[in-house]
Image (cartoon, rainbow, N blue to C red; front, side, top):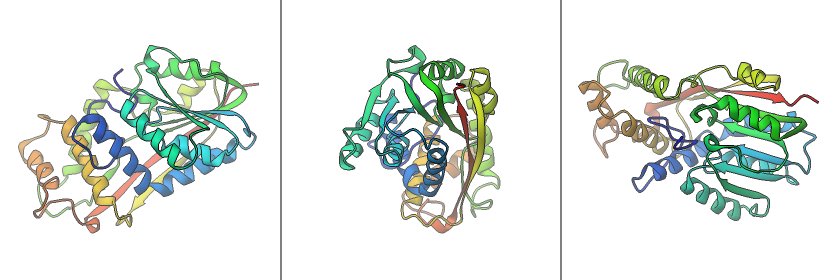
Length: 292
């Protein structure tokens, strides 16, 4: 496994970059946290309510990226230790910087580890948060079993995943052949089906197969029409930039031309006006407990 946050065309971060894949993903992750702030707050608040007894425990953000989940957990559990595991050094460096800026460096520890190579020695856990990371693993079932073995009796895991990528464009963006984004998502789905067959699968059965007791599941709809956040167009540009890197040579010429127009600095199709965006989708969070 090359990354717990990057695989082919998968997009899971946001923002400006120096051009390297790691930089692109790091920026995208930060933008996701900003533009989809309401989702992140609602999901982590729900996890906090389910894990009200954690107190001074040890929490894990599995596939932490730039730390949205890890830092959110540290703020919601002010006496807990948080371990953030990822394989991308750029993302972990950004996480450490943010933790220092928030005064959380003493309680948030970043660990560089490839979970496909084995479970690191993290100590006993009380709560694991795995946001859109498990489907990147070669064997997510093994990771779930490893997390179970590392969790204290009664401890929890919360898995946040999505069935399909977010949509950013209106159904008729006003240029190009109609249905562009649907075809883009379909092409992306084919690429993921080959590289990451677990994408879109239900995670409650996977958790149960690994020995977890599923206790609740909730869908969190995302519907920003138009998105009010001032960095929404930057988020969309970062998303489509990431897609363009992963789908090179896989699009029909007219769809490639549409994608090029979206990413242009100016022009009739350039992503510059949030009024032309409708960010929508659903993320599902499943919570399970290690049996007593």
